[in-house]
Image 1 (cartoon, rainbow, N blue to C red):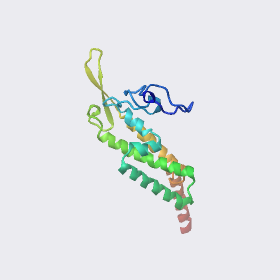
Image 2: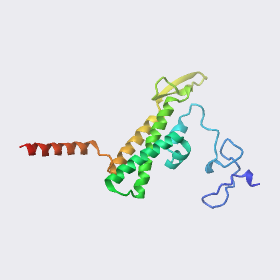
Image 3: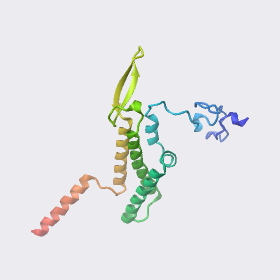
Image 4: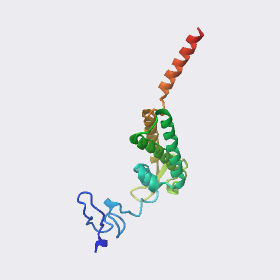
Length: 195
């Protein structure tokens, strides 16, 4: 009879979830929506699934969303940053390893979303890769189109800002003002040596 319930371990009690199998999903079997049950997916032309995929936890995105090629690229990006960190500071503390992994995953998320922008569903295609077209209907049922910035653009910008700040915080990326100050200081030293 346990196959008629969700059966996943409830975090609050440690007991099997007693909700009906597939509760809250489009399925009549499997786990409920609170324990990983799957619906049949987002409506056609819906961008939410892509943007939610970009906000997925790093491990989930790495293991379940991207394919082998992007996973290999993520590994290479992480190794490059890890090498740069070791050359600068020595051993990498666990927390910094986790942050470097997040940065690598974020960079792959931007690539993943760029790929989606190139192949997004026809019903979202406005003729411009950064603008989504949505079909809406008047009260009398006549279709019309609305255009808006792709939901992915803001997400990509946020990921890029986070990456830059994290790399700066880890000492692996200098901000332009610091670089400008160092260049000015170096120029002053050269000029004073020539005097």
